[in-house]
Image 1 (tube, rainbow, N blue to C red):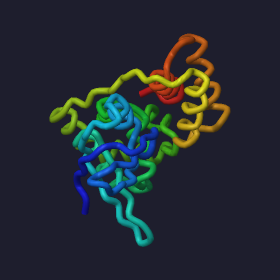
Image 2: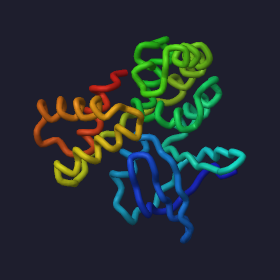
Image 3: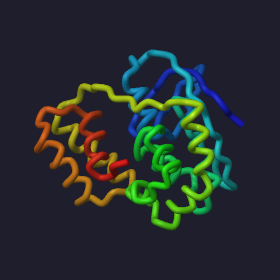
Length: 205
């Protein structure tokens, strides 16, 4: 099992990273919180990720996380009935680790159901099964939300943000409406902030 990888990014998107480790490219699925951290790094910078290796009968998938707290929360989510690795990845993209842990520890089912793919029953199971673990993780480590700036042109940003939201499970009309609302209030916002604000419109924790 792979538990940690260190290398340089070959390509980077909001959900998927190709990590070059000694000339070998590893496809690693990542939550948005990790994406924001990686996007702040220079292209040739070396970095390490905490890895969860998910083995299926027909494939092996790698999920990467900037912090150990992210990976721990991801693995706890996998223990909840009805939550697979892709959905757990979306859960971690729904807010900062601290916000998610606070929602779980506080029994905030309404906040959790705003995450795409999380229905009320699944949210209730998450609270029931993870509440005490979330309280412990909050006490042990403070996860920080990672804001950053980036550089693409605004029109390209809009399409990239909408595409990222669709990949996270939002409907096209929901994604476009959220982006439009953000741009109404913040005209010159750049990609990362546009994505972050659009997620806040769709899923407030």
